[in-house]
Length: 115
Image (cartoon, rainbow, N blue to C red; front, side):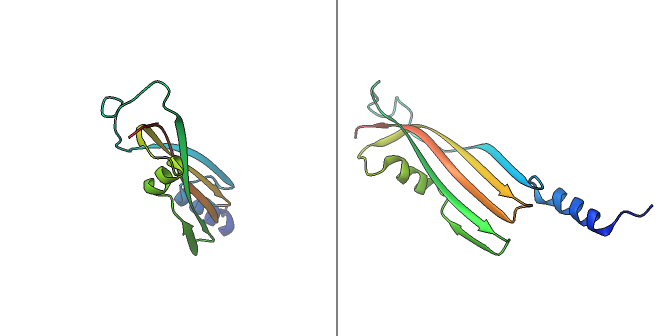
């Protein structure tokens, strides 16, 4: 029995895409070196902040955005004057229809100490 070519192409595309065929929602840890509470003047009332930066791509042809750590740190501080410490960094990826549209975000969570 012959396997239809379309099915074979779909299976090969799914195997090589590193994502789900119709939808992907993945969260991954990333490394980010930051100051520890011992390195800054930490206090128990330091606010917990979150910053996010994303990039997108469509149809494997165009990509735009900034999913860098620097952009996520800037978003987390949002004009605050302070030092970000005790940072946790994660990556979140969403892909639709074999990656025809993808969004990859860097998410930072940390505390802000006064300078």
